[in-house]
Length: 376
Image (tube, rainbow, N blue to C red; front, side, top):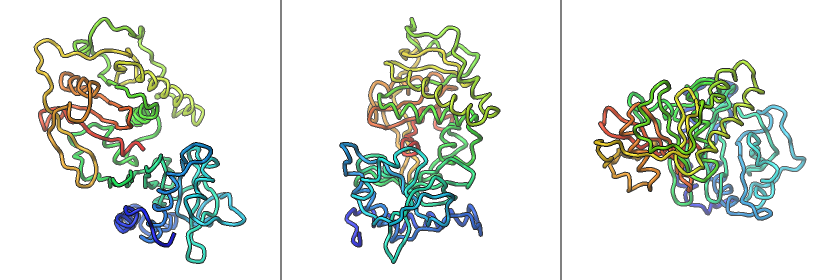
């Protein structure tokens, strides 16, 4: 692995080294708990090995792996191999079935000037360099912000020749939905029962079923949304299903058991978005209907343009027609956001893309936020 073969690994290694150095210094100055910082050479080798491992197959399946750059001495109760393995694509692919469940990381560190896999760990210090293999040719660099947080912040997404470096500075929080702000700064959101956090979990679950879907979030206690829905509603829910909202309020008191129940209900509601049409919930998480058809109210203008942005370096805002970045599902969601300006529409595509539509008072039009890089 002395000469990387994946060009993007070398191209972006120095920028990622700088990111971790700057953010670790700003986030935990002088903290002994922060993880050792990766140098460009180590980042280069890690990304190269992970990329080629992602193209391997083990028993017919593509590997899913999480690599953490830290020595075993800096973690808690690690599982250590008697003989560390050389870091290489084939070795990573063979280990993948044992570590594909969430929360398990392969530990990588230096031994005699070479990177080796020393074992596994579940404990990751703040600002530890973590590299996840999501799918063939798809890698995500991330880190945890705080020692006591389960949340990770995505730093960069490698997808073949395309590399996206996430940028919080590209978003003006004063004019954007709270969900987008929480995705960009996960350390600033509340606990698992926080309303924005639950909406984030719904978005991740929607994307995970890979059937595509639309979730419309409307203000509770109003009926204005009905003018944008084609009747009759085939799958109306009467009375509204309130278990998700109830669990959101109760989860903090019940601890891990309550969180597990909340997760199952989140997945159940997100699963409804796979049905043809949109799923409709209130901002208090009452389920009103699913499989609904969005229509343009009489006398309202057709949505012609939207502002399209993605929170990445070099990602400039563009004004486009909805048809330029999506099909019927995206056009109808943009129309709904234009007509119901106090609502938000979330759209998952079958190819993994995820777009959040919301009315922008500053722009005077619908703003389409491409956010799949934040949900990986």
